[in-house]
Image 1 (cartoon, rainbow, N blue to C red):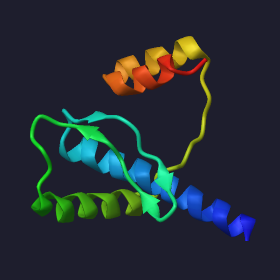
Image 2 (tube, one colour):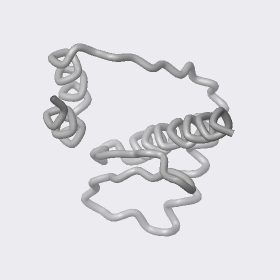
Image 3 (cartoon, helix red, strand yellow):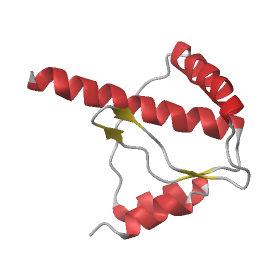
Image 4 (cartoon, one colour):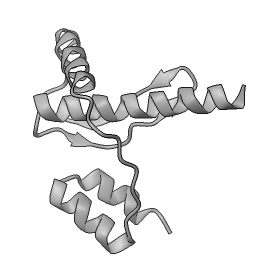
Length: 104
């Protein structure tokens, strides 16, 4: 059972990343916050000047399906702290920087 739970959490975590990628493709000015898996799914917090509307959801879902079909490689990596700051700064993601600053 623990293995199944681990696999489901990995799937949800990956889905959150796919959601973030889809939203960034469709709405490049959106800023990413956090996107964890949770007990019954996943979510992602975004900052956007124009709130998403219910009619945006099918477009986002379609883009997510497109990303899945691209069969992009999944890569887990760890960076030294200073390189992690450079990485998120280069991407223009201030909330990711805040999260890094909170890590000791």
